[in-house]
Amino acid sequence: MPRAKRVSESELLCKAIVEGMQENKAKEIVVLDLRNLSSAVCDFFVICSGESSTQVDGISNAVNRFTRKALKEKPWHVEGKSNSEWILLDYISVVAHIFYKDARHFYQLEDLWSDAERENIPNLD
Image (cartoon, rainbow, N blue to C red):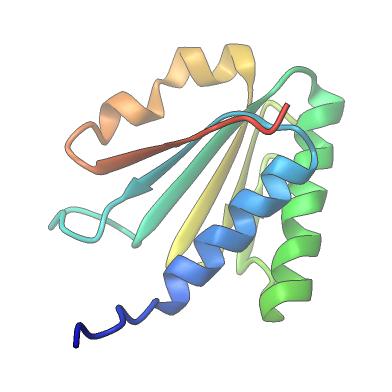
């Protein structure tokens, strides 16, 4: 009989972050699994885009709500709330990057971590 794969805390946190992003109709959600990279600073990056600074801020709030409700987790550190171009929510083992679409294309974070395992999450439109 095959063993059931144990889901790590960082994987559960990743799932809650993705659900928060989907709740607020985030675009181009990508999960980068950094666990096999020696230079990684955390287990996962979860990256998404918003169509406006208002939506970027709303996605950030939704992610906060979902992680608190599902896992009683809150970010250890938050960056970028003042201008809503790139909001970073640092949960230590998982870092959520919420970009305004133009800023995401400028920084190309996925390309910087191109050797990570990548999962594209379909939009729920």
